[in-house]
Length: 412
Image (tube, rainbow, N blue to C red; front, side, top):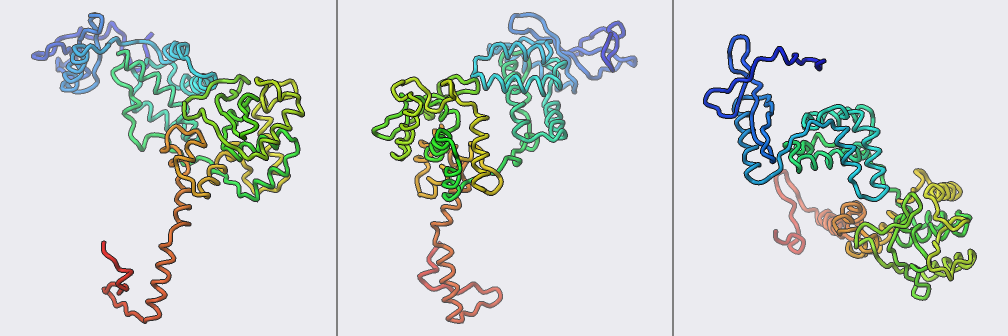
């Protein structure tokens, strides 16, 4: 059986060479004319003769054959595949050695979106236009920009690997135009807590453990996984310093942090360290270096949903205005405090464990701009200038510049 729009193989005319174009062939039409599509012959990396159909002009066929010959001379691997996307993606997924959470995200993207859409396609048939159509399809379903981006990440990795192995000519993801890529303007705005809201939130948190956890996150800007992964050995009780070396993943396992910059030591208020000491004494865990600082009744790590529920209850009891803060908003609020206190980008970056200062600047651009506006005296200078001008009744005629005092005019 043949696919829709395809002729049975028996009905195809025999392949004929195109005169004066070595390695390029065509299948003559009923009128005998030479017309696309063309077929080119080339040798793959193993020396096996291969054929490829080019749906374009004769010039396109020549350019494609020249490209394949050049890649082979350079030593690049050329080994086309007839595998479907679903089959190739399954093999790719089995070879991944990444964190469990990252693997979960890859599995979700393939199961929910990519395989249902591209699964039966041959890998070498996926073009940039097909990917653009997939993004448009996701938008029509009402999915947010970050959801679409999360599904595109494993797609790009799969196609990049196939291109590196010579199984497809190029990764079509790299050919997407800027306007075709998903936009992230649907991101939830950061909820920055005021100092009064922070105090009300802590006062409304009933359990000592949750109150210590929320206060620690506000005082350090830790990610929730980093805070839940702390052990007694990570606390310097005398110096009030917390060492962040690991995080607790969603399966309750302590794993190392991704980057060297994420591994850091932070000073915290001594009063907060005394609260943590009291918490550990209450549980009888102070003398066990491997005990988790924040733990369930049986000593295992806390689940994120438990902490989220406690934060939501505290925000409701504190009558904090909507939207209710998330766990990550505690980190944003800490960064905002540092910026308001006029700490440098490098200080904030080290405190948050960002890999580069560029990341810190990008995430908190608006806070820094507001801080610079607070420090600026331009508005005050302009106000005094206009007031002085009004008092002196300076004439400003049509087409004439404002006459500035010599001290204010300056030079460009």
